[in-house]
Length: 260
Image 1 (spheres, rainbow, N blue to C red):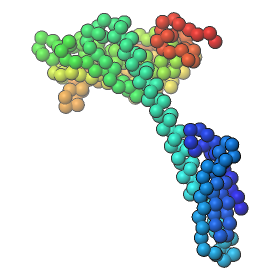
Image 2: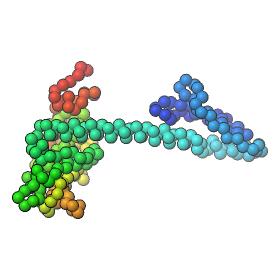
Image 3: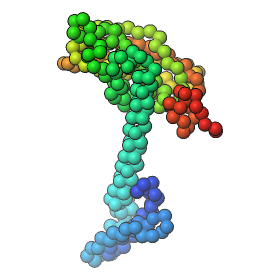
Image 4: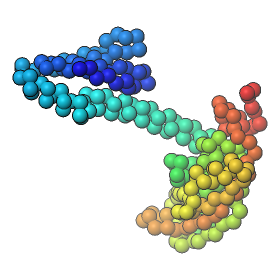
């Protein structure tokens, strides 16, 4: 009996796995696209009685072969690993491009010394040093906290649109800030969507209607991890165009397009 299956096991290349069952041995042959044998595995065993051979053959029909399961698992792991690497690289490129734009276009962002320290498509963190944001009491100036938190929320929404290749203008519509504790050191503002919001719904509305709103929560914690300052804001996005495939966000923002 021969059992055939086709799967991808390396770099997206299709391989055919042929498993030959015989009362005295089992042979597995992997052949590539050109039909060349890539690997052969043979498991020999002692002669068995005809009844036992039939029972073994029947059992092999009912349950997947361990070898096939292993190959399929390796193929999935290889594909998942490549996809994750590509997402990480794309995420880093988008984050760095937005940080350059912030520092180039917003003088206050340069003066505060901020940087986008993390973004995982769900949350975003902007960090800033104490020195350029200090007040007369030696802690972080309230205006700097408001500025960094507002930019964190704005950047979170901006990167979601960039990731979806939607060219849009984003505005803060309203916000509420609570100053709970003084911040005495370098600080980080972490932004995320409100619990009842989702990027999928926001982006779909933006594509269909050309405008959408989304609520964001931003937190700055003290050295002990307690919320020192919080911001709740609503942002509005107005779509300009869908960025053509193959055109970078920087190019789209500069008005540069390529022929279709």
